Image (cartoon, rainbow, N blue to C red; front, side, top):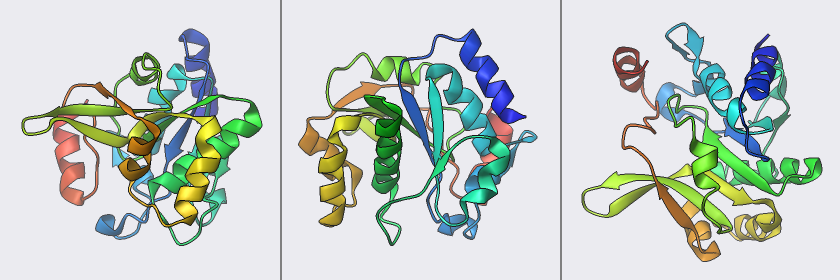
Length: 210
């Protein structure tokens, strides 16, 4: 079972004392509305790859999804839905993760996306080096210097009521909220955050990702 593999990874690694949420609550319109995390890449689903990549980095993992949550039962991990209706986007998934983290007694939450199978194995540790309420991963950009990857971040759980209020007031763009929190950015390699949005992206990943 995948959960057994995850537990073994955590036992062998040196996880950061925090939890992670896998954001799988999007509508995937460019992939025909399917669960992108269930797409196969080199004989393994994307979400399985994501779980095995993030599990050694943290103490606990929760999945954020919407619809029939039982469809993730085979993964052996807790699943939480958005508490804000009408699919407001990944910020709502972060909030769902924060609420779960607070219930478990965690002060920090790491967020990762279910459609990005090759993110850094030291993501959590690198993000934890910054001491701001929100820390986002970023990649080099020739024009702007750094391009934020806002679904990959470290979030102070005590900020969740502020985030809940912002969502209820209509905030949907991640950085509209994170910049107001005094975000910091951590630079990673430009190839670390290739995400799969289209069939063409999946075909490219089959050829170029390990």
